[in-house]
Length: 164
Image 1 (cartoon, rainbow, N blue to C red):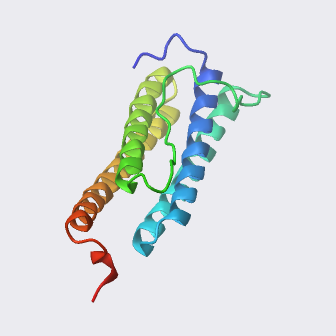
Image 2: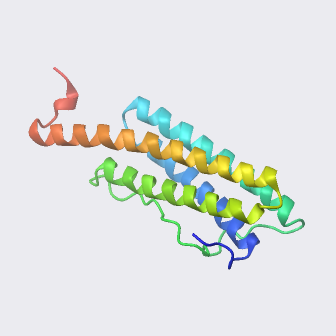
Protein backbone atom coordinates (compact mmCIF):
# COMPACT_ATOMS: atom_id res chain seq x y z
CA UNK A 1 0.00 0.00 0.00
CA UNK A 2 1.63 3.25 -1.14
CA UNK A 3 0.59 6.10 1.13
CA UNK A 4 3.01 8.69 -0.19
CA UNK A 5 0.36 10.50 -2.23
CA UNK A 6 -1.79 11.27 0.81
CA UNK A 7 -1.41 14.06 3.34
CA UNK A 8 -0.09 12.84 6.67
CA UNK A 9 -2.87 14.69 8.50
CA UNK A 10 -5.49 12.76 6.51
CA UNK A 11 -3.80 9.42 7.09
CA UNK A 12 -3.46 9.93 10.83
CA UNK A 13 -7.05 11.23 11.05
CA UNK A 14 -8.26 8.11 9.25
CA UNK A 15 -6.27 5.89 11.62
CA UNK A 16 -7.71 7.58 14.71
CA UNK A 17 -11.25 7.30 13.33
CA UNK A 18 -10.76 3.64 12.40
CA UNK A 19 -9.45 2.77 15.86
CA UNK A 20 -12.35 4.58 17.53
CA UNK A 21 -14.84 2.82 15.25
CA UNK A 22 -13.31 -0.59 16.00
CA UNK A 23 -13.48 0.17 19.72
CA UNK A 24 -17.19 1.02 19.42
CA UNK A 25 -17.94 -2.09 17.35
CA UNK A 26 -16.10 -4.46 19.69
CA UNK A 27 -17.86 -2.90 22.68
CA UNK A 28 -21.24 -3.33 20.99
CA UNK A 29 -20.42 -6.93 20.06
CA UNK A 30 -19.36 -7.70 23.63
CA UNK A 31 -22.85 -6.70 24.76
CA UNK A 32 -24.47 -8.89 22.10
CA UNK A 33 -22.71 -12.21 22.72
CA UNK A 34 -23.63 -14.58 25.53
CA UNK A 35 -20.31 -16.42 25.83
CA UNK A 36 -18.60 -14.75 28.79
CA UNK A 37 -15.11 -15.61 27.54
CA UNK A 38 -15.81 -14.05 24.16
CA UNK A 39 -17.34 -11.05 25.93
CA UNK A 40 -14.10 -10.61 27.88
CA UNK A 41 -12.01 -10.98 24.75
CA UNK A 42 -14.09 -8.39 22.89
CA UNK A 43 -13.88 -5.96 25.81
CA UNK A 44 -10.12 -6.49 25.88
CA UNK A 45 -9.87 -5.78 22.15
CA UNK A 46 -12.06 -2.69 22.51
CA UNK A 47 -9.69 -1.38 25.18
CA UNK A 48 -6.71 -2.14 22.92
CA UNK A 49 -8.30 -0.17 20.07
CA UNK A 50 -8.93 2.72 22.43
CA UNK A 51 -5.25 2.73 23.41
CA UNK A 52 -4.24 2.54 19.74
CA UNK A 53 -6.33 5.66 19.07
CA UNK A 54 -4.48 7.44 21.89
CA UNK A 55 -1.10 6.43 20.43
CA UNK A 56 -2.05 7.60 16.94
CA UNK A 57 -3.47 10.83 18.39
CA UNK A 58 -0.13 11.42 20.12
CA UNK A 59 1.65 10.95 16.80
CA UNK A 60 -0.87 13.29 15.17
CA UNK A 61 -0.22 15.97 17.79
CA UNK A 62 3.54 15.68 17.24
CA UNK A 63 3.34 15.72 13.45
CA UNK A 64 0.48 18.20 13.01
CA UNK A 65 0.91 20.65 15.91
CA UNK A 66 -1.98 23.01 16.51
CA UNK A 67 -4.29 21.03 14.20
CA UNK A 68 -7.23 18.79 14.94
CA UNK A 69 -7.86 15.43 13.30
CA UNK A 70 -10.77 15.33 10.87
CA UNK A 71 -12.56 12.31 12.25
CA UNK A 72 -15.72 12.64 10.17
CA UNK A 73 -13.91 12.96 6.84
CA UNK A 74 -13.89 10.05 4.40
CA UNK A 75 -10.77 7.93 4.67
CA UNK A 76 -8.21 8.61 1.94
CA UNK A 77 -7.42 4.88 1.84
CA UNK A 78 -9.91 2.04 1.66
CA UNK A 79 -10.20 0.47 5.11
CA UNK A 80 -12.82 -2.26 5.53
CA UNK A 81 -15.61 -1.50 7.96
CA UNK A 82 -17.20 -3.88 10.39
CA UNK A 83 -20.98 -3.79 10.36
CA UNK A 84 -23.21 -5.38 12.93
CA UNK A 85 -26.22 -6.66 11.01
CA UNK A 86 -29.35 -8.31 12.34
CA UNK A 87 -28.96 -10.97 15.01
CA UNK A 88 -29.80 -13.66 12.45
CA UNK A 89 -26.37 -13.21 10.85
CA UNK A 90 -23.91 -15.70 12.34
CA UNK A 91 -21.36 -14.09 14.63
CA UNK A 92 -18.59 -15.87 12.73
CA UNK A 93 -19.42 -13.76 9.66
CA UNK A 94 -19.10 -10.55 11.68
CA UNK A 95 -15.79 -11.68 13.12
CA UNK A 96 -14.53 -12.44 9.60
CA UNK A 97 -15.18 -8.76 8.84
CA UNK A 98 -13.07 -7.94 11.90
CA UNK A 99 -10.25 -10.15 10.57
CA UNK A 100 -10.31 -8.22 7.27
CA UNK A 101 -10.35 -4.87 9.09
CA UNK A 102 -7.48 -5.86 11.39
CA UNK A 103 -5.45 -7.14 8.41
CA UNK A 104 -6.02 -3.84 6.59
CA UNK A 105 -4.97 -1.95 9.73
CA UNK A 106 -1.78 -4.02 9.91
CA UNK A 107 -0.92 -3.25 6.29
CA UNK A 108 -1.81 0.41 6.78
CA UNK A 109 0.45 0.83 9.83
CA UNK A 110 3.34 -0.97 8.13
CA UNK A 111 3.04 1.31 5.11
CA UNK A 112 2.63 4.40 7.27
CA UNK A 113 5.78 3.53 9.22
CA UNK A 114 7.77 3.94 6.00
CA UNK A 115 6.79 7.63 5.98
CA UNK A 116 8.83 8.07 9.16
CA UNK A 117 12.27 6.97 7.97
CA UNK A 118 13.67 10.10 9.66
CA UNK A 119 11.92 9.35 12.97
CA UNK A 120 12.88 5.90 14.25
CA UNK A 121 10.73 6.14 17.38
CA UNK A 122 7.51 6.88 15.49
CA UNK A 123 8.32 4.31 12.78
CA UNK A 124 8.90 1.70 15.50
CA UNK A 125 5.62 2.58 17.24
CA UNK A 126 3.65 2.22 14.00
CA UNK A 127 5.26 -1.16 13.32
CA UNK A 128 4.41 -2.14 16.90
CA UNK A 129 0.77 -1.21 16.29
CA UNK A 130 0.89 -3.35 13.14
CA UNK A 131 2.12 -6.30 15.21
CA UNK A 132 -0.71 -5.70 17.69
CA UNK A 133 -3.18 -5.83 14.81
CA UNK A 134 -1.67 -9.20 13.84
CA UNK A 135 -2.33 -10.45 17.36
CA UNK A 136 -5.95 -9.31 17.00
CA UNK A 137 -6.21 -11.23 13.71
CA UNK A 138 -5.04 -14.40 15.44
CA UNK A 139 -7.55 -13.95 18.26
CA UNK A 140 -10.42 -13.41 15.86
CA UNK A 141 -9.41 -16.34 13.64
CA UNK A 142 -9.46 -18.64 16.68
CA UNK A 143 -12.89 -17.35 17.67
CA UNK A 144 -14.19 -17.80 14.12
CA UNK A 145 -13.02 -21.44 14.08
CA UNK A 146 -14.70 -22.05 17.41
CA UNK A 147 -17.93 -20.35 16.35
CA UNK A 148 -18.06 -22.16 13.02
CA UNK A 149 -17.73 -25.49 14.82
CA UNK A 150 -20.53 -24.57 17.21
CA UNK A 151 -22.73 -23.19 14.44
CA UNK A 152 -22.24 -26.41 12.43
CA UNK A 153 -23.09 -28.52 15.48
CA UNK A 154 -26.24 -26.50 16.09
CA UNK A 155 -27.32 -27.17 12.48
CA UNK A 156 -27.03 -30.90 13.18
CA UNK A 157 -28.10 -30.87 16.84
CA UNK A 158 -30.39 -27.85 17.39
CA UNK A 159 -30.18 -26.32 20.88
CA UNK A 160 -27.11 -28.45 21.70
CA UNK A 161 -25.58 -25.49 23.49
CA UNK A 162 -28.27 -25.64 26.17
CA UNK A 163 -26.78 -28.71 27.84
CA UNK A 164 -28.48 -31.77 29.36
